[in-house]
Length: 176
Image 1 (tube, rainbow, N blue to C red):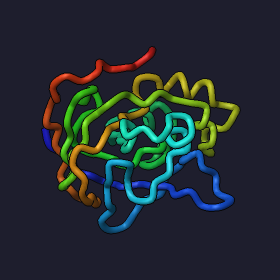
Image 2: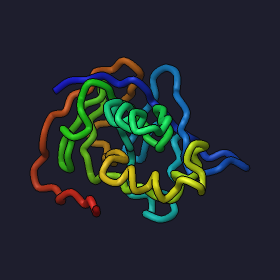
Image 3: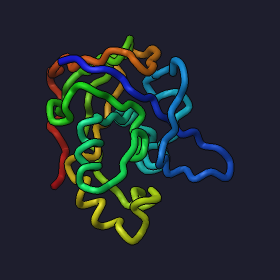
């Protein structure tokens, strides 16, 4: 199944900035993807809580879930939930742990689903007032983490293809 990359988003760690990573900002032009992450992106939890694991080098999300959440009244936009890559044309539910995904010249492998966390309250339309409700809403549909198998560059408009399962990977760690 093929789709396209509609946005590349990052958030770098700048002195005095909120390192939560939400929202992430659109990047113009080609962005380098390395085994440790996308461009100058900084993921605070991955860096401090997970010891810089390479299994969470890339986070991606799909436009069908953005539209689904919008239809439920959440004004979600690409980059809001911390994804690096926003993909159109491939349904969210067609991905699973162990799938290899080609994005432009980069190849990634899905390592786990992203669990919703309290940092989602940093979004203006969520806040503390709607934090618990939004976290419940996002269970099972926050996105996917992936490790990088083949480094390269990505940019808006690149083709995206789900290449299917890799052999011998861990099972999905979704906890609902």
